[in-house]
Length: 319
Image 1 (tube, rainbow, N blue to C red):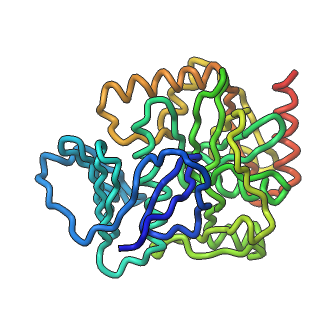
Image 2: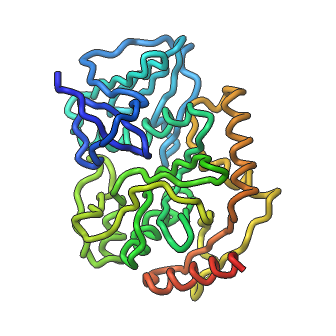
């Protein structure tokens, strides 16, 4: 058994016997939120234990969620089985045969870790990319393929530090909501790397089944925000309606909560207490942080074009 190493993920300490080259080593005496350990065997569960699932783009079951007393378990199709002991704060995993570790790490970083963190009612985790801009963090929410990662990568190339590519943790601190950095990496499809960045970025494989590569932040002389910062603005990305320009429309409070709901990571969507905490947090977020709909320019656009339209909108919001 490997010794446990401490890593920082979304501002929290995780101890793991699986090595994570994507994560920074955790420095400090903070109590870890859980430990990750490899298990050679996994338990068989009855069908009654399964209560929820995520579907893939072909509407096939990708992840099954189950519960048995104080344990949650996750079955990721043809990848691995995971079990989280809430009381012991231990997450164990059993990989399927011949699945590479890079794929296990990808599933943990982008799917399993976020839903476990969502058990904490004092935080909110959104499926969003984000960068640090003027006066705080600007985040971009959207469905898969809407361009969240492309927007973040372009803004990073324009000089703005990355906060997250995919998992945005929001917490209340001293009377304001702040965004907590996740880890230094952005995943882009091979077509985006070719068409938008001319394959000029140093990358590595993100998962053996995915048509995406991970852009290495430090290796590409890009910056990563290491400290939590005030959440300045949320943009909900939607498909382009204009071939020649960006379109930004401010959203008013009554419509914000239902707009944000689909992008929340949650482990148990049927738990009443968790639902109430999420609703209260979303209401606080909607009243505290400006939210706007952003339709990106159709086709390719430059870093400077994107930066100009966002800074213009942010400056109007300050006045």
